[in-house]
Length: 179
Image 1 (cartoon, helix red, strand yellow):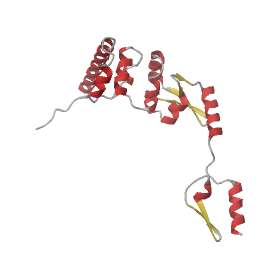
Image 2 (cartoon, rainbow, N blue to C red; image 1 turned 90 degrees about the vertical axis):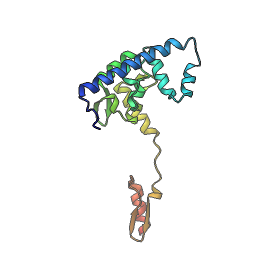
Image 3 (tube, helix red, strand yellow; image 1 turned 120 degrees about the horizontal axis):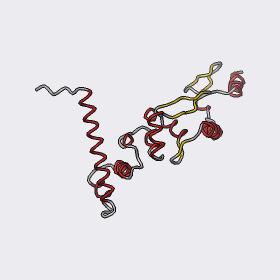
Image 4 (cartoon, rainbow, N blue to C red; image 1 turned 90 degrees about the horizontal axis):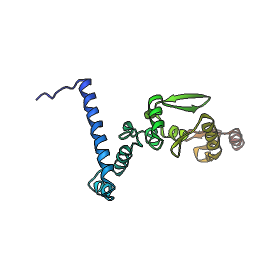
């Protein structure tokens, strides 16, 4: 039997219907919670993800943009902790993230975990200056790796077992060991 092939318009309408249903569920959940404080726990016991319930509650309270309810990217998850006006603005315009010597505008749903950590802090966003400072502090906290397990010396050869950064001092040490 041939299944129906949906048009893009039909898919768009179905997605809009799901969004409308989610908004209704969220409003009903928020309305029901004052009289049934254990309701979220009871629903979770039926197999519904508690994080989804939290998001639905925030949606019902109008503190979460509808586009973020089902979003799973690191950027979208962190954006959900921001105020609604900031959520709308960043979903529309993306985030300015400092990378190397420049600035990239990255759509929220395309942010990596590292970019989200750099850009968001405690329900707020970092300015470019704050990102620069955060990156500088992060690089100071980075512990140098011990490269001694990444290489071995055999007669007049250095065998590198794992890619890594090797300092001038270490290379000079190798030459001394080979002499």
